[in-house]
Image (cartoon, rainbow, N blue to C red; front, side, top):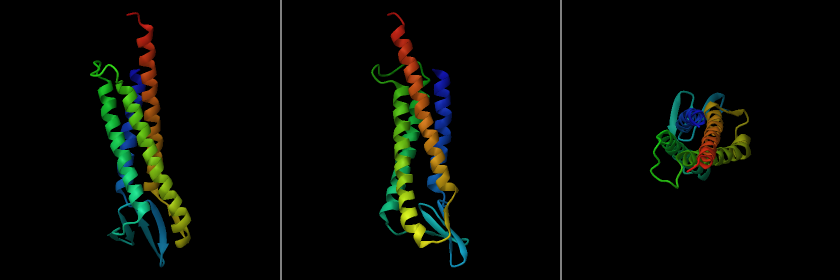
Length: 173
């Protein structure tokens, strides 16, 4: 059980760090504009070496930002539940900490999937046509890696929960 929780906690830490870095950085998309390179993130866009805040309230940016923040919050609360799962005493007999941590990581995975799906759909269908020479950049890729890490953290914690339940049910009372 502890090896699964340890693997889950490792994946959770890496996934949460990647979520925060992906959300905060400005390299979701790179493109060429008027002969110079530019890149943009969820909060700013940069033309050459000058960066500007994205002050427009465009729905897909707002949705992507919101889902990325929700994902990071779910992952952080999952880490807290995962750390508490190492404590032997359960404060609630009906609430399993590994199960709760697994659910939080699956919720984080769902939120980051929604954020990346929205961003991908709008970028490919609208911005991809607007900028001829463009590509997704490393912040965007970190978001996909974070999705995998939070998903595997959820899998590890669910396996730890199942092992704990099997042991609990097999021991005589």
